[in-house]
Image 1: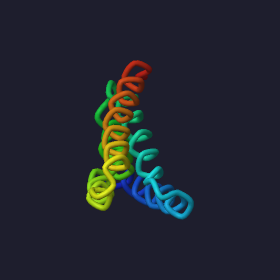
Image 2: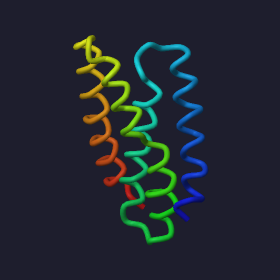
Image 3: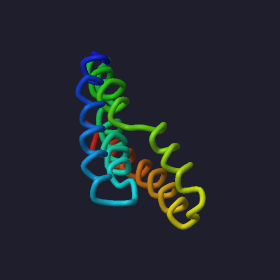
Length: 106
């Protein structure tokens, strides 16, 4: 189930990130996928092991990315305002969306 979910999450992350990087200097695509994945993780937090494996660990795990987020932060280290915006946006929006998903959990 995890592999099946990841097979859809990873390509979606690539497509979203690639589409936004062509248009914006700020890594908005990564922020979007991290927020969406956090929301979905919260949403499926009360489901059974199959759904959790497919949508939580698989799809959301492959959709979200700490590694690209870290690379983006490293690239922004000489631009303190952009660095801090990216850092706090990803962390705070991730927590907020996860909490919202948990609140709305099925």
